[in-house]
Image 1 (cartoon, rainbow over the protein chains, first blue to last red):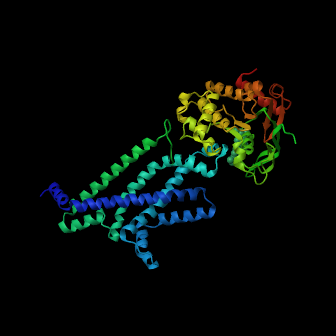
Image 2: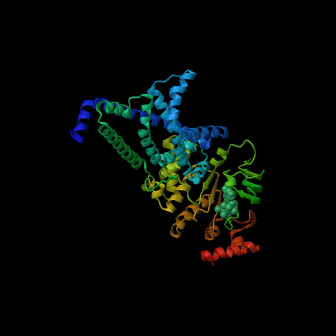
Image 3: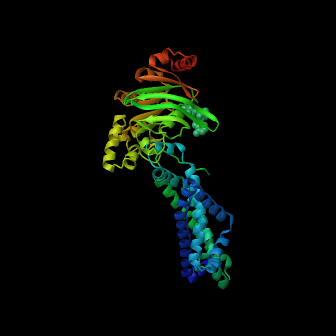
Length: 228
Length: 252
Ligand SMILES: Nc1ncnc2c1ncn2[C@@H]1O[C@H](COP(=O)(O)OP(=O)(O)O)[C@@H](O)[C@H]1O
Ligand SMILES: [Mg+2]
């Protein structure tokens, strides 16, 4: 059998397993990213505009997450939390770990995006009598979200790849299933080629999709620049 | 208390760190009056305007606006700002909103008008500054500087403020666009609005101002009739500065 035939052999015999694994990888990625977005946005707002104690707590959280390996965070949630009486299944533990991790990074991307909004926009908004919270929702968020799109695109592509850490707690995502298939068929190079092609294709699709969103939300005549 | 005085500033001081920027400003503005402030760059004119609408907190002194001491305690800052329109040197339109949305934002979010009513008022304000319907759905980046500044003026007057502050509204404009903005300001002055205008446009000051103030080094140095202050200033500092400005604008 040549290389192409071997790959076809794999996809025809393990197609369903691979497809399910890919779907699981996509699921972990998107749920993790969504948790990260849902938490990251308020974290960044609190970090930039909140009262001092909150700022300190959130900054500490971000530093803690950024300063420790994601795998340690996952193991903590999966193995250490049960000691405190919180038991989670592997999938739940994985999306929580990835979501909490991503929240810290996304908070930083948003912080940079908000920082890139001109002080003049604030002054103009305050000068017509808007409250600070309305300035945030009506001016800072709409502009900041747009500035943050490229960074968030990178983040979701990172997560796509990092979702493979769920392997270590036995979630049958793509790397986990590939490993099993590889061991069973001894077609290691072939199966990891399939895996790599999947990751690359997904990255390309995500990048394209983000470009479309970026173009759709672009402000006519204007290039909003973030600090890179 | 004198009801004609819309704004009274008494011994106003502002420090940025150790830098003493406002050094005891005294100023009064009557209802319906157009006051022009002229003075060198860095003398504290912008800081003074920012103190008036409380974007900057003064360190000492009093500001009484509309019979209320706004430098006092328990002041609703937003209510004060709502009553004072501010026109910035660099327009500062909301970049992500169209011309008409820029004008509507305050009407909807501050005055809580229903969108229909807000839209009507915004349209009226835009028309009054010569921004026609074809421009209403354009974004700031698609407008010329003169158009942007007129939208910014519409945004300010739509809120129906008691006082309008202009901080060098034409300084960032190409020369050929200055006229259209000055014309709008002149019209507002003639409508009897109360305005404080920081500008170097002495032609505008001579034609439109009721009173001119020469401001230097954090203080009011000289004030009086436009002709007197601009063409025949009493102090040496004002004389020198105005001479340089007049050369610049070739107004002899
Ligand atoms: N936010 C600020 N922080 C520190 N210094 C400032 C700030 N704003 C203005 N200044 C200083 O205050 C002085 C007066 O500035 P400004 O009021 O802008 O003068 P003008 O409008 O007359 O040119 C300048 O020396 C300026 O550098
Ligand atoms: Mg200035």
